[in-house]
Every structure is written in structure tokens, then in C-alpha cells.
Image (tube, rainbow over all chains, first blue to last red):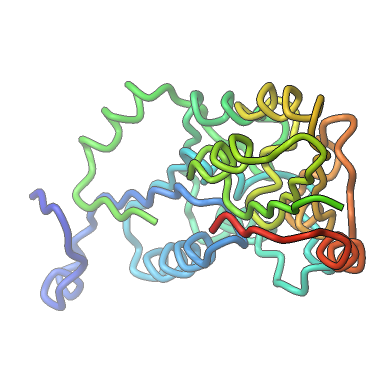
Length: 135
Length: 101
């Protein structure tokens, strides 16, 4: 079953339907609230035992940068949460290669282990999803 | 001191840095804050434009924003780092201020 938008209706939940969800993160952390909001929704979806993939592209790659220290700006540093996702059985994390390279970053600069995919591979991954949510 | 231009958006998300670079006259200052700081990090697509601008314009970045984003060790050489009181000094010492929102 394929839907362009939507979530889990009560009947699906009761019958234990598992859908493939992809969350696309495209914004840098802290400048806007998108990154933090996406993380909240991802954690909620985990509670419903869905098949979740997280994609980091464009400035979203910056969400995973190591060494974030937010004391001086007075905001919550939520980057350690990405490392806790494994504990919620969210283990499919993907970073777009082109986005990473345009920002001078490598996989070693990131707080979690990710699978680095090219845009074409990422397009295939999105095609397979039941629900795609963009932040 | 001449004009101060403030840029707070990522150069890969918005074109406000390009606009500021186009309008900044020699001797003026461009201050990068919030997501704008990514422009002054090594390997970013904006690096060459920043290096070119540094020949005539003073480039500063707010270090609390660099540190929040984990970019404190990636700053391009020659970029001045200021704290909040340094930010205030820049504003107070400038003839006028433009925020490129």
C-alpha cells in the first residue's frame, strides 16, 4: 500500500500493520526548530514499532556533526539523542554523499555510524517507502 | 567604522550571504551568526567566496554559534571570532547595520 501522506489509522494500529517510514532531515540544527521536531516525531514512531529510516541531506547533515556545545547559546544540545536511537530499534540512518561533501564533512565527523548513499541510491530508497515525512 | 552586514542563514540554504558579499564595500565588516557561521568553515561550498571577500572586507563569526554547531575547529584562518560583547562592540562602532534576513 502506498500513500503520499498520512500516518497510522486506528485500525491499522490495532491489526499491527507495519509501514515503511522515511524521515528526511534537511535543516541545520538550532537555527530553526525543524531538526528537534523531527527527532520528537521519530521517537514517537518508534513507539508504534514502525519500519523507520532516517535520511540526512542538504543542511540536515549538520545535525550529526560531532562536538556540538550549546552552553554559550543557552539551547539544549540534542545531538546525543541520535546515538540513543539504536536503543529504540532505529538503526537505518542514511546520509547523502553529495550533501556531506559540499560541507567539507566526512563520515568520521558524525556522532553516529551512518550509511553514506549517493543521490541516485537515496532516490531508490525513497521510492520504496510507504510514508515520507520531510523536515 | 564602516557598515556592518549581519548574515544569519546557511549559504547552502539561502542566498543572503551572496547578497551581503555583493553589497559589502571595502573596509566594511560581515558578521556571521546562527546558521550563517557554516559559511566560514573549511570545505563548505562558500569557502572560496569568503576567502576572496577577506581581501577587502573584514569577516567575523560569533563563536557561541560556531561552538553550538560543533564547527569551532573548522574555522577558516583569518576569520575573527567574537563573543556576545564583541558583537555589541561591532554594532556600536559601525556607521550603520544591515541584517540580511
